[in-house]
Amino acid sequence: MKNIINISITILMLFFIACLPSLFHDQRIDVPYLFIAIKDTFYSLLHPNTIVFENLKSGVKHDIFPFIFEPWVNSMTILFSALIISLLFSLIIAFLMYQSQVFHDIVMHINRVLSIVPDIFYIPVFISIIIFIYLKTHVLIFDVASSHEQNAVIFPILLLLIIPITNSITVINQLLIAEREESYVSFARSKGLNNKEIFYRHILKNILTGYFINFKQIVWMTLSSLLFLERLLNVFGISVFIFEYNTPVVLFISFLMMYIPIRLLFLISDLYTRNTTGRSMS
Image (cartoon, rainbow, N blue to C red; front, side, top):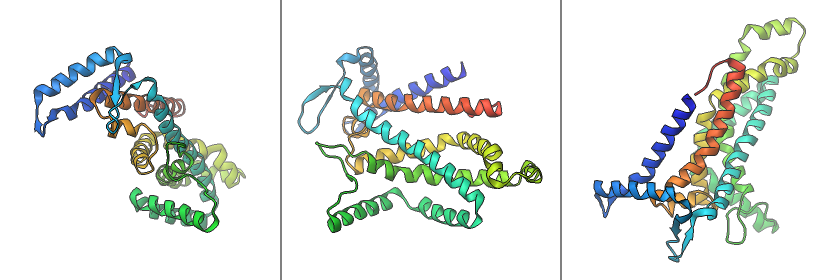
């Protein structure tokens, strides 16, 4: 029941956020126009088959369904791929850090550097490296930007990975430090278990639980970077509808289509947390 209430409140908030730009009409605050936009948006949602968006360059109008599904799939593919790969990679790194203090120190130094560098700096650097390799070898490792013929996916995933990986390693490192000080680690060693056995039998489960408790922050930071990355690399994703076709009804549908899969992801991670700790992360 609590989840249903939270979801309903969030969807209602997304609806009003989508309509809020209508408050500023003709370079002035126009409250009556806001209420008109709310009413029109609500009625449009009752008849989704009639919702259209207009290409601002050509002036051509398109039905939003099913047109929006392709960019939505592109965005969710990049987002979820980055989150899943970053989790798996971070767990491997966590095991290696637990095994070697030298490796731990090297990883944390690199992670601190990447954490303080904004997206806007390292993205052009990686693009320049790909272009430099192409100029020298005539081999294009990845498509660095999308075109009408081909949509870049792999390169955006690799770039976006930096955000969840740096955040995941920071969280996991804090959890590792806490786990090292737990009495069960010393007890397990006294029973003859080595570091590998201790990690896989005990520490891994605790790390995953702590990770999912901090999961929302990682997801929201990754999502914000995704929208920026899509615009920079000209990816045909959901950000197109947010920044270019930003009528209230189009904005709300875009917000809702992003929110639903992310909310499902939170519910799954919350279920895991409840099963392992008996408490919800919500």
